[in-house]
Image: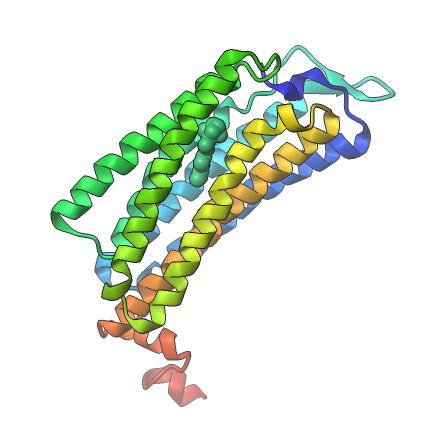
Length: 274
Ligand code: RET
């Protein structure tokens, strides 16, 4: 049982949650179009990263859509407030979505940063194992968030250990790859690190919300936090990785990316038309 089910909501609170959930899945749909449309601007070996972004978009779209439907079924207007109906709202759907998205987002990093061979295999296995362990221990803990008994804190803590391990690994992969990247891509790679650090920390923040702000406003804050985290960790992250892939492709001489990189089409119909 999630703490969303404990409160009544006024019109503003109810509508705000409904709007941010809708914003969430609308951005995922927009992201899907963007990642598929820009796929051809990178060298073939980086195009897999765009496909992975598209996979993340589709799974997040459906998860947030279901969650949004769930929100509108779980509460009904009684003339004074939105009150609980016979359907429960549940953030558990988010955890199921992360079990797809977290491994995919991390593998995407390896593809774009050009990690190959045994190093790729080793990082891939650790990313998936630590990612799933982080998610499922947190999933076990969130069932106890309304009473905040020992399992809530213990599972949350165990999950945090895996989370910190993952962050160390991500830092190693990013900073260990900088020397291999062209000069023009290094700043973006560092930005990816900061983005991961800040956007991923929002998820444990949302987990803690029942303990920090146990009220209907806390529910609104939690759903806004989740939406900001989703848009930054999935979409903005994918856009930044796409920029790195284009810069690396340009440095490797992939023609569409070279044009893109200097923002000035050369030759052909486009130049003639100018
Ligand atoms: C939990 C439980 C409490 C402790 C910690 C957590 C971390 C969750 C994270 C989730 C990241 C999700 C992403 C999804 C993208 O699609 C499980 C909330 C540390 C870091 C990046």
